[in-house]
View 1 (cartoon, chains in turn purple, orange, yellow):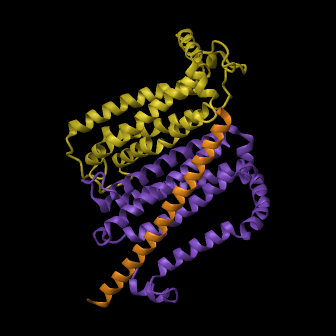
View 2: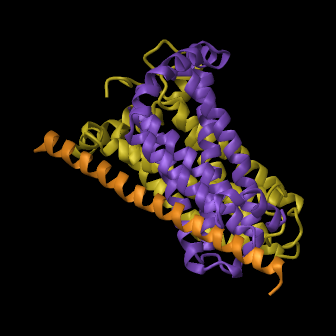
View 3: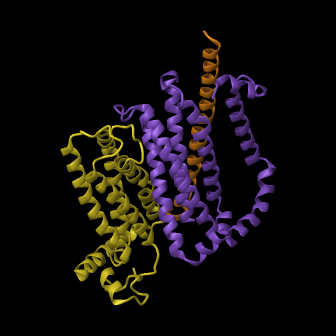
Length: 199
Length: 50
Length: 189
């Protein structure tokens, strides 16, 4: 994408449009979390979750525990692959595996990440449909969804645009900060996901 | 410096600033969230085992 | 053989630490969470290596260098999984020892270990003559495919252990009872 066409399209956001959008979204998330909107929206979502249990996914998940467990196994495998691609790519950014070409590692690992994310999301939706009303009432489920959203937005709209350019142009401390926060956010997604199983 | 180069530098500054803001927020949230989680686990264990 | 395994499991179950782990408020959950989350380190990296060998991912990254560099973190992950896996077994030994899924998982783990050894031996023997090719030679691709398939089954079997469909106490066929090594008291402990 031509940088000058991006700037002219988002000129209304000022000289730093990506930063402006990021700050606005963070502010909106804080307002939503600590303002009244969250508590008024929450009861509205119950009907959505009740509907999810009536879908084909919900019916299969509730009727055949084997199908649910099989999909859960697929969720675990794809979670493993997603985590592996994150650890590999971010490890390289942090200076590990230094003899491997950084550009090929970032690009190759990102493709694996996208594939794994699609499978994780698909299997996750199936599983939620099977236990929708139960997870609706679990705070840890909402923490996971929040962290997952942050992780996806971060991966595609902050991390990727920064790393798509020549890495040598980017401040190495910023690269390390991005790599560390990527590992943190995906670890939190996985850990909160595991804790849903214990709740 | 050409206009193209200036534009590239500007987008680099924008991407870098966005990365610092968001990553800093993630790290801060991570520290706060897990501190609360660890604290609540400690309290629960103290209640359970004395 | 099943009687021996059962006797060892009962002996382990009678130890204080076994009871301490499975009656602890959080410890069993933490061990299990560590076991599952370390999948990202061990299995995730293993799958990256296998997919590279198959030509499905990271085609421009030199294959043998990738395998060499990722070996250490992958093995560290497997060590953690091994330790946490032993602790999980130790916490509930009688039920686990008589679980069909646990036994299948253990057999497949041995198969995967042998496969990994043969894979590594073949890879070092070929001395990176194909390092920059997008796909590894066919023998190594076979090893990678076996690894991908069997590790997926291992993860699924691990998930199935928690379910009671083939538990000994629930009127199983003679074949299932023989394979699972049903002796006594799977759900007592």
